[in-house]
Length: 229
Image (cartoon, rainbow, N blue to C red; front, side, top):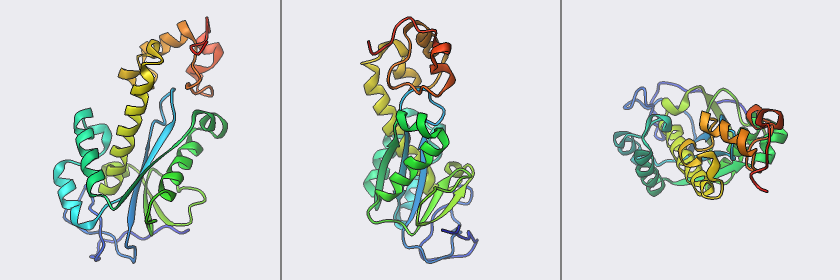
């Protein structure tokens, strides 16, 4: 589908720009607009997770005032509180993921886009327009979409999706931390910190590590044993 035109003109169904919080900037016929974002692309452990969220126009100013922005700019506690707020007021929200096997088979970009597509298609109702974080359109999505670079810092709907995805993924990785204590997952959330990389050298990779990523390859890990043995 073609990309939408974003115009600085009023429209009955609008979304808030974080750059211009009082300016409705979308002109078109979309009744439901979804923000879409993913988290975990740079991690070396665990799935990539995407969220899609449709927000009611009546709650946009409220969410903006509450501090909804790019999840990376927020503390864990603030993200958690905002996630509850977003879930409470959203018309629809959906989490989806692409597994480690899919990441290794497809590559991380295509797996991220797959997770985004799954999140969007899980929404009920389906949106008429998707605002997608990044510079890549979602392949195979038969819904009008608009990729936006740094969209999670520019548009409220995308920022809300980034918060939902981040909170869900962090909770998922924290649950796995008890099973894989060597990797310090509760602190690094699956990212390749020095402690995590050292653990890979000492204990090898688990089945949740991304084998296509250089730090997780056997020659990089210098396996002494596998973590799942």
